[in-house]
Length: 214
Image 1 (cartoon, one colour):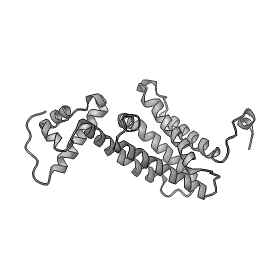
Image 2 (spheres, helix red, strand yellow):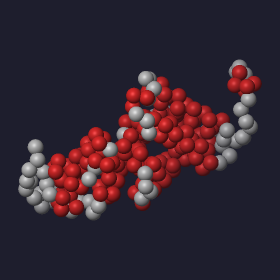
Image 3 (cartoon, one colour):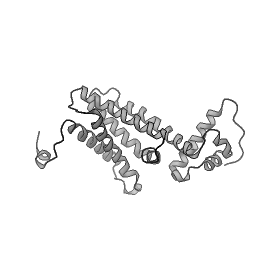
Image 4 (tube, one colour):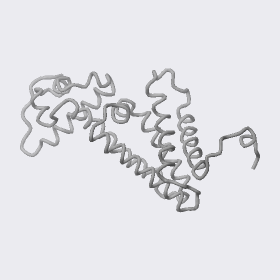
């Protein structure tokens, strides 16, 4: 139910901002970027549009604040799944699984930040993701995996996990694989093995290599 809302008490502006972001997140998930407007958030919150503008100067700022709020949890998830894993390759794999799963859970936010119009906020987030994975690749190199260039290898790794997410989130959900968990695991394995196995050479694949035992 909507209606008038009293002005937030002094010092409680942050609570209203969080409430607005909660509402914006639900609107974005349910209706996509087109449905997320200052007026829609204000109406749902029971406040006037100027009250929303006190916290977000524009629709774009509202959209990116909503997206980046979700994205801020990504790095917590990545650290949680890799913490305590001594093998750096396994740790890299688990972070890739978590990344792809995150993107599939938050398709609207992922599209806006990673595939949408570039902003300073989205560029910062993309850079943070790249540096995070490069650190994981560097740990593999330090442990003895032959890696000529951590940066180049990370680019290939990121293209794999990003592609795995983008392939599905731009399709209707009823076209997604029935077993998304298996898809996520295979996509992560493909990204890690493909990037690391070619990290020190670029020999093209062959049938003999595919059927070689050992």
